[in-house]
Every structure is written in structure tokens, then in C-alpha cells.
Length: 429
Image (cartoon, rainbow, N blue to C red):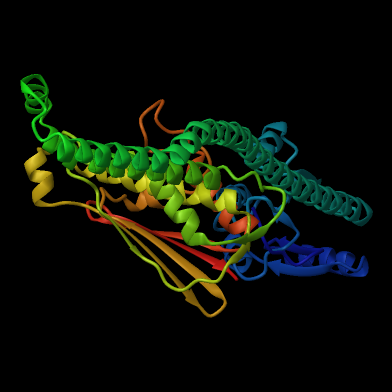
């Protein structure tokens, strides 16, 4: 389609000087700009520099005919939309049909009637203008519909994610609450239990002092239960139980941190708390199993101020990126033996820093990496490389929306196939 034209410029192509003079004078009197060419070849060359609004084209010319000239015009995308009116003394309907078949919009019969020529020229200029206006309206409408579709798709993704996160948040909050009740009971009783045990052991020592010869039955029972080992190991068991209770409390706190229901209001938040909670939630996937040793996570935290943000949403971004990092390492370790993985362990590194008025967070994995094609699409909604049923395609698209649209930051990805991936998040303070 012609992208630039000189409005109301008419190109007259005719080898007859008298015809050129008559038509040029008539069109000029009608306030139309006129350009002339005396052959089809000259017209085609001239069109490269001054594309007109309409062409009056003589059929019978030396060199290439008007029909061939028109055919070449319509074959060129830069000139195919310029309306062509044939000028001819031919009266055979076959010739007219041929002209229309080649793309002409009208015929003017020689000898000319100036009023008829002007009427036809003005009509087709108007039609061309209306057609261009219509095309622009269609293009604008198509663009508007495309934008509306994208907005609708994004809203749909956000709705799905909001519902999912709402359900997950409620579930986590409920689980954390249910955990807190028995944990609170255990935590409150562990120290009294330790004191009671110490009192009983002290009482046992007193009995052994005052009754050094307890008799064969008690002596045999002491040997059977290995009393000295029990005395040594029982405090260790209590300490281990206390450590387990502390661990459960940390997990419960992480669940509450991840599931914070604060999507409607911003609040000051320690990003390191969010990163640590994400790692605690994913800790079961980082542990060693029969397929691979433990995945080591290195945290290199800088000094960060509290960030005024939506903590629950950023926690979602962190856990998504870290879960993807674990997936990438699992993929890289696929089909390798435990010994092979142990010989070349792969890990995850988290770095945070403050640069001017920006907080920068990088999450780097030594996983399978991505091809440039995949890397260029990872933030597209509904795009996923995971197998059917294992990925929704919402994660990185939502992460991009949260970081860019909700917090005015940036999220970028650098990856090399077989080497690993680094996601970099910047957030304005």
C-alpha cells in the first residue's frame, strides 16, 4: 500500500503532446497539480520519485503499452493502490474488460470532453480519499480491538492469579493458624518438661546416694534400660524437640509472610524477610534425595532499606523465580547419576544491593538455561516450557506485571543454554 503521496496530483501518461496540453490545462484550471510522462517507461521511473494521487494512462503508446504499464503498476506494492483511468479510442468491450481486469478503475474515451474528464477524476479522487480514510479507520479499529484483547487477556490472567493466590493465601494462613495451636502448646511445655526431668534425675541421684545397694531386681532393671545412657541422652532429646518446635514456628511464620493479604494497600517491607520465607517454603525441594545432593543456596545480602510495596505480591515473585531455578537445576541433572551430580553440583545464588534510588535483586541458577527463542518469550502470558499439567504459563507473566506495573520496576533475564539463568529485578525506593 502507498504510504506517502502528494495529494491531488494527477499523472498524465500520453505520447501525444496535444492531449497532454489539453488535459494539463483543464486539470490545472481545476486547481489540481499535474505531472506528465510521454511513455510507459518514463511514467514508471517518475513514480519512484513523485507518486501521484491518480494516473490518466493512454492505452496505445510506443514501447510498452498502457495495459503493460498498468500491469507493472499493480504488481508493485508501492504503486498498486494508485487508481488508474485508461484513455483510449478503442471501443471494443474486450479491451475494456482487459483494462478492468488489470486493475483500472475507469475509462475515458477519446476525443476528450473536459467536463467528463474532470468529473471522473474528481469522483475517483474522492473515492480514493474515502477508501484511505476507511482503511485508516479499519487499522485504528483493529489496533484498538487488539489492545482491548490484550487488556482482556491480561485482566483474565490477573483474575486467575488473584483467585489462585487468594485461595493459596487463605490455605496457608489456615495451615499456619492450625500449626500454631499445637506448636504453642509444645513450646509452652518444653521447658517445664525439661525442669521435671532434671528434678526426677536429681531425685534418682539422691536415692542412689542413700541406698547404694538397691537389690538384684533394681540392679537388673538399671542394666536393661542402660540408665547411664538415658541420663546422658534425655537432655539431648529435649533440646532436639525444642529445635524442632523452633523450626515449625519458622515455617509457620514463613507461611504467614508469604500469604500476607495486603494486595490492596502498600506497606513497608523487609525484602530479605520475603526471600528467606520463600527459601523456607521451598526447603523441601532443596534437600538431598536419592537423585541428587542438597542444592546449595548462597545468599549475598546487602544493606537494604524497607521498601514501600505490596509484600504478598513480591513474595509471589520470589517464590516463583526460586521454584523455576530449582526446576532448571532438576532438568540439568536429569538422566545423571547421583555421583555425577555430586561431582559437579549446581546451586543458586541470591544477591541484593542498593544502587542510588534502586534496589537490585539477582537470582542466578546453574541450571539448564534457555535458548534465545525461549528467552524472548518467557514473560508472555500463557507461555510455558513445562510439560502438560506441570505449568500454567502464569508465573513469569504475573511476575512481570507485579514488578513492572504494580511497582514501577524492571525484570530482565539473561540465560545461556546449558550454563544457567540470571533474573534481575530492580525496584525504585
